[in-house]
Image (cartoon, rainbow over all chains, first blue to last red):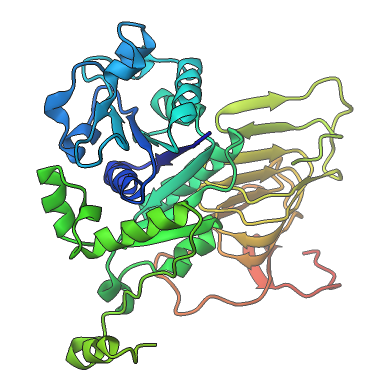
Length: 266
Length: 143
């Protein structure tokens, strides 16, 4: 029996899809069996970010309408033999093409077979959101260090509580440590103070994400990417492992880096 | 989650819950909210409202009576909503987006202060304006 986790945020553009792709890939690299479900019907993206767009034959709605068997719609990611699958969203339908009950049934079937079922939720709080959370047992809330994103995350946490999905875990995305240090960006404590939920990880702003998203190769697979490392850590935390937060200090310069190299960092 | 002994109208996430067949609530009765109120959540209650938790930005409390927040009040609070201006709003940390008592409306200054007061405060109407003072336990808090 696996876990069903929904990745949600309320606000658009904060990194739900990127996070879903990276956590899914990260968990698969840890040897877990993972399926990613894109519920952003009509605006599907997860397939593009995963680099699997050209292999879509059937989609989520074909499965829920009974046009094909679930197995036929699952796209295997060749980088991970038989451990990472994608169930893409339909692009020509809308959010009402599937019901909450159908999502529940689907998630129940998927969790029989997969260690992790990760659901990429659409932006907003309407039917698409309700469908995405219907079958989930756990929730990850993504926010960026912006007042608007934090406000929406707060609203989402309230809605998750009302839907009996309490204690979501928070991922802070696109943090710029240098700006935080200058007092120009909300820091982690400011956000935790308001949202009052447990922190799963902090992902620093990283230009490599743009490149990896465009190429369809999740950043977790890039050993040199800082964001990739953050996502690797988050994936390990999801499996129950205790991994300390990454040191995002920017002070460094040459001496700092040398000190770190020789193990004198704090 | 909430005390449902009294008739109350609670609006949460767009769903209005009305409880009928209960005795009418007056300003003297009190509801206890034992959770943090998040953006989009509204409590409307004819009596007093006590929140054990924070009231986040985007959350709203509209009370016929007084409002007491045992946490950070960052959202909107309206005390004495029926027009009674002897009502108060008090919070462990009073940082509301907007504060209303009876038909008086105030908001936080546009420029952020250097530092916020790190003690409980109390808002009430004095001589026709909303004033905010340090909360002193046992003080005769009537205007």
